[in-house]
Image (cartoon, rainbow, N blue to C red; front, side, top):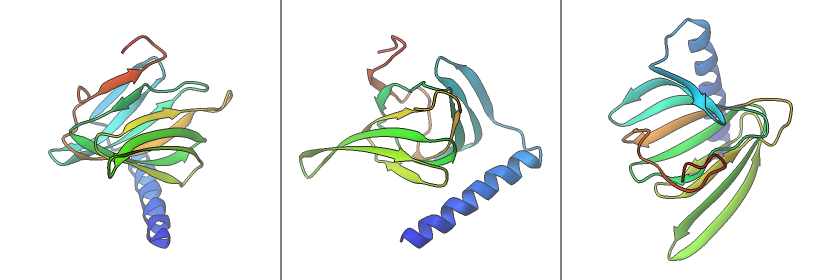
Length: 148
């Protein structure tokens, strides 16, 4: 399984890089977020493909989604990820430090937070969602920018 993930990570990184080089146009570009922004490359009824760009020392809200799960691959920089979900009635809390090519899965309904711990370099994350992708499908538990 680990070998398959490594191959998938490499294929997705290459696909994203080639897509950007080939001049493919994004479906949506939004850099008006206080933490940075995102570029949506593909959106269907079953999911979406986008990159999340996080400014140095910035983080997204502690949030969860009810209509989609997510998988994040680190494209550039280093990420700090907090994850909390229920498994067999038990609360599971996990924290990760991820580097380029590493990934984490965010289950449907799991609380999660993405942070860029670097004070110099931006963070770029490739996000693939499974399920209905709507930016409004978000419940915030904590937010550095007063959006709770």
